[in-house]
Length: 413
Image (tube, rainbow, N blue to C red; front, top):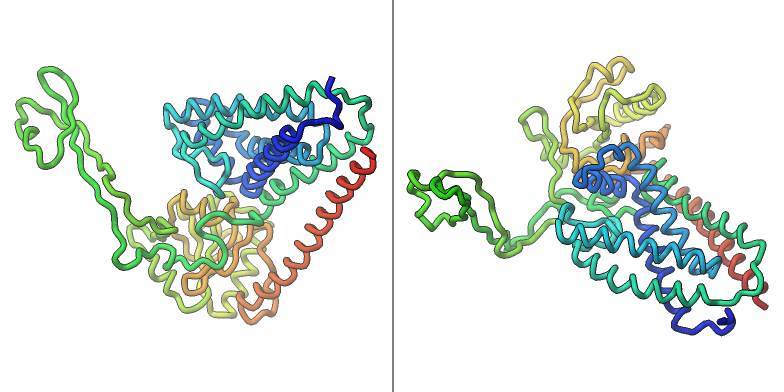
């Protein structure tokens, strides 16, 4: 039997590699539980598992936390036999899933690394096909180790690391992601994000027309230059589509459109010289009384500053519902996908200044602006306070993790 003191260097190297992969993958998904839930919903839809849609957020938080926990346990060398088994099981399951996804291509991006790193389904499968055998080698090597005794305090470390693992997902769900990988991050100028540089290629496309042969019932694609399809006694039109020949410049922000009925008022919003308080509601019908009180206080502050207030929603504009809470602001429509990228929360507030995103809040975190002269002045003060709070939190976590390392080092000696 192999002694744990004589563990091969290559196995420890594999342990560190898998720890890094699982920590990174789990963390980037944990800080964006809404995005992970959306991606799970896409998979449930294409695989006919809509009955699981109601559990998307729970599964998002659970899976990302488990992945992060496995990585941390590997990093700190805690219960590695059991952990390496689950790592191999994860790799096997997701290798099969990514193979199916690569062949069928139901979703363009697997979401394995959240919004931080985009991989195609085939790229993800190739990654997994390399990591899977390595995870099996690591497991088979670790399981043969002859560990004379188990440390009774390991369970304490597992619980501590489980708490650390679930914290980012819960915090990001209740508030907003601490790290925003999306195009609408704070400080982004939306107009610049949508702009295409002068001289940049718009791409080259060709139009294909699909016709059915009336006699043979076979489908055939024609280009616009091919006039064979003119003969309507032989060909019957079925469909048309565009295919990309040469990829053009893709702006960071693909769409940000605000509509009042059929009227596009996006330019009015982005060119407004004052601060624009943009409330984001998934559905005005869902607004709670406690949230309405925060909204009303913000509206009163904006009125004193002569700033503009609007709300956007992907559902029906319903001012009557808001009026029952004494909320009187203009309502407009926005694409559901854009709303989900703009704000990773069910409802909230985005403050714009000349098209630049100054700040974003989950609806439960909308602050009392008090006697501030402007939202911008308040945001500067809030950033200073948040920096101090985040420093204390991260310092505490760092000290805790160092204590774990120190204790385990003492235990080995």
